[in-house]
Amino acid sequence: MFRYLSFRSALAVLTSLIISLLFGKKIIRFLQSKQIGETIRDLGLDGQVNKKGTPTMGGIIILASTIIPVLLFGDILNIYVGLMLITTIWLGFVGFLDDYIKVFKKNKKGLAGKFKIYGQIIVGLVVGLTLYFNSDVVVWEKVDSSFVKGPIDVEEAVDVMAPPTSDNPDVNVVSKSTKTTIPFLKNNEFDYAYLIWFLGNKAEKYAWIVFVVAVIFIVIAVSNGANMTDGLDGLATGTSAIIGTTLGILAYLSGNLIYSDYLNIMYIPGSGELVIFMSAFIGALVGFLWYNSYPAQVFMGDTGSLAIGGIIAVFAIVIRKELLIPILCGIYFVETLSVAMQVTYFKYTKRKLGEGKRIFKMAPIHHHYQMKGYTEPKIVTRFWIIGILLAVITIVTLKIR
Image (cartoon, rainbow, N blue to C red; front, side, top):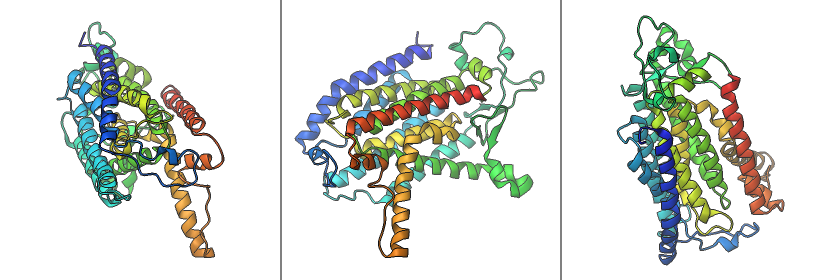
């Protein structure tokens, strides 16, 4: 039974749910006993003051509920699983430092922004360099299930890798690839070497530098996007669970020889193990949502939000679906964009007019809707619905190709 991803994935989901539900309550009580509560500023938002003192750093529940099932049911020697564990632990640690400074040092600013960026850059470097230089990372840019001899079970095909031969001219197996999937387009993969086309024949040689820089940028953007989205009870948790479910499906398809051939997407041997990781991650988020839904009994803090964003970013990069992030992570994107627009416009008008003006009543945009009188549960639910629509569109892009 343990040969099948579906069986191990189910165990990972159940285990993470049990851990988050059973031990989550104990962790919340511990945080309350240590008076590890959120400091809330009165910004005139409905119900905001009532959240004062709610335990934070609840991201510990998510991290523990994700890591433990992966160690139990996943292949920790798998290069992709290893990268995900490193990302989870490291960004969770960076977020923990930020929460620790806010709560115990009574410094509302927390960890300096530049140190958060440094932490994200480190993850980006490790992931980017590993995916390019590690010999265990192999990508099939074109596959054909007929190359595999004998009957193969659909799930067993996840780990099957037929060696390329002179009889298989349509297969291009590469270990050092800077290519990724372009949404909507058939038989057309995007190569980061295209961005330095002006170097001519040297573009392929230096493409890895562009790839690593792109990985760093994506990790920073998505990690901070998740952090900005974490402003209402259950908003970041539910949205991230929807995104995680979609990525889990994409990982299963990319790691399966038969399905990747049918959908004409890159086959990535070994990436099927990521389904175990994502199953545990989804279970952890759903379990945490039990306590984080309105009215929240605990907040994830930066311990959770930075790690969640990093997990989603690295996962998408590993399965070569990072160009789908603007669609799939549309909620993150809009939240971040609203802040950028607000700050930029305020500074511009202050410099030009002597008085800063705002585009939104408050940023991130979920607070804008709060200021307009929408209740918190309604905003969160509608954002979830939008997230589901974006997830469906993301999956549909595979068939459109």
